[in-house]
Image 1 (cartoon, rainbow, N blue to C red):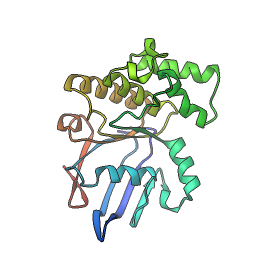
Image 2: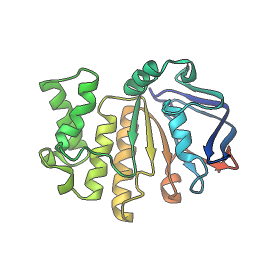
Image 3: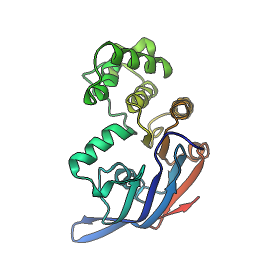
Image 4: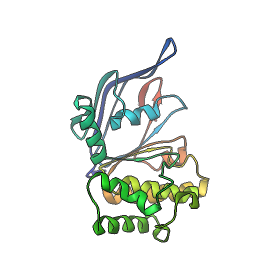
Length: 228
């Protein structure tokens, strides 16, 4: 599936963490290539390194060894400032716990990423309102997150992740806090928006039904990435 999104290449990536006096290896020589516009699910038990993988792809974390290349850019060679700018321009995030700012309305939550890229005013607001309509929440623009259901909050979170037009969307257990029917609705909207944008999508999930809707499924197995 070709899209405008970046390709992603992991080359012999290893990552470990200190736990007291022990070193816990999470990823060990993990390698894979994800094509532009491809939709990939990452499966694996809790603690296997799925979320670590997203942190490495986004440049939030750095590998102990190996290379993470996003759209031809080896993000390990970037300074912390440049990694932050790269992430802000290139990547959108959807989290299991929504991470909406409680003191901002739905509309204001969407406008915040645009402010970070200096998009403001009527054009920014029009873009945000169009995206609220796309996730079927155009009538909830002035509503605060605590007045929204879990499914509505996650749809706002998806809209926020996509509003700045990122080529890459990373989703960490996006349906983990939702009931089955709401999860299906959220996944359908996510797929539709990602497909129309031509973005590359990586979804970490425990849900086999969600994984099977992706183009490809990878599993973290003893620190490595294997085809599931």
